[in-house]
Amino acid sequence: MAESGRKQQLAYALITPYSLHKSRTGGILARLLWANVRLVAARMYAPRPEGEFIRRYCDVIYDPQERHVSLHYQKLLIQYVLENFTRPNARSISNRMLVLVFRGPEAQRDIMNAVGHISQDVRGDDVRGTFGDFLAEDRTSPRLRQARERVEEGLSLYPALQRIELPEGRDRIFEPAVLTAVSSRMTEGHLRLFRRHAYEDGGFVLGALEGIDTSRIETSMVILKPESFRRRNPLPGNLIDFFARTGMFFTGAKVMHLGVEQAREFYARKLPQFREQLKGMVAEKAREILNKARRLAELAVENLGADSRQATTPAQAIPAVREAELLFAESQRGEPGRLKAPVLEELFRILGERLEDLEPDDAFYSDVAEELKDLNARAEFDELIRYMSGEDPETGRPLDQDGETMCMALLYSGEDALRVIRRRLGELREVYGWNILQNRAHASDPEEDPVREMEVLGMPCPTGREARPCDLERVVDEFYGRPE
Image (cartoon, rainbow, N blue to C red; front, side, top):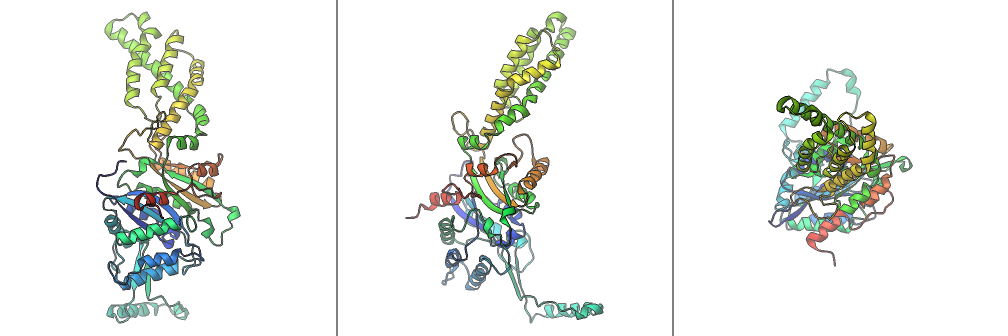
């Protein structure tokens, strides 16, 4: 998609370990994508206990001059980071977190507005209002005293409960759901930090799942396809929510644009499948053409007085259908599930040369489908490459400057993950899919080679063969320059 001519900004949102633990990632991303920004990078982090990531992150927050954030709020944030980004942490959960990087003309402002402020007021118009918590008890409050009196009075009705001692609650709950920077200086500082620690503390974070027997864990990759990433579209978040319900662990993420060659390598195994899966399209189209030819012949006889013997010959009837079909095929170029013009041309040639009448037997249709299955598979394969890359498969040139070609790859890990995620994909396509290509998502096929797929895309993955630079490093380098 072409960027606005206005000067661009970067902003980030860090989805906290607690939000990931509670599977709130999709809901949060959906809210953020309503802003006038584009998602340009995504990376998982799980800071090492012996590393310096956490201290350096806090260093960028600390501002004794209070230029943007009060010292009170700085202390809350730094204390939160120290308690929750560690391993083990205060909540005894994984310290996995997801960093999302956005670009837009006012990205800093737009992401801050989408994230919102921590408040004790109940609200739901921003991320923190919906997913965050900030509760502090004022023990001197008359309302608090009255509420506790009502509790004591109500519990007095249940004698057996009087003997039960509940643990004392904390005076304060602080869960921001998302962390972000409040100034361009802080954004730059943190993004440079994320780049610096992209590989030591980020990437494939299965190791952060403490207490998990990794020998029993599989990892499946999901790709959210381009049509879901049009501007101000919350659908990617909804799709992530869909997969979150499988109970699998979110262990990796990457934003990417597939080039023609990369897409060809990734989908190489689809070509043999297309030969068998799609040859029925040829037979079906041949039947449709001959049905139309017979009907046109009947109309010519009934309404125009044509000679029935002449009108019903293939040489006379088929050309009348050909022109309309090829014109329609050209206007619908790229429409999934339809024969492409080169296949139609060859089909019409065969029909015109080999048929003696307009009612061949079933064997003829099967023979035509078998003969054209390679040509048809290649045409559909090229359409898939064109759709996923946004480029002409022959020249590599962009097809539409305003078209969306961005994808987001996600890794889900867990027992039997390949089968579970694949089954979930089928359910997702029933709800969100449009056609053979625009079906919203791809998921690893257990019968193919999931690890090879991850490596083709340069994903952080179980083999550790991640392509560099990762998407976050590339975006930060392009925007701020490479480190000296």
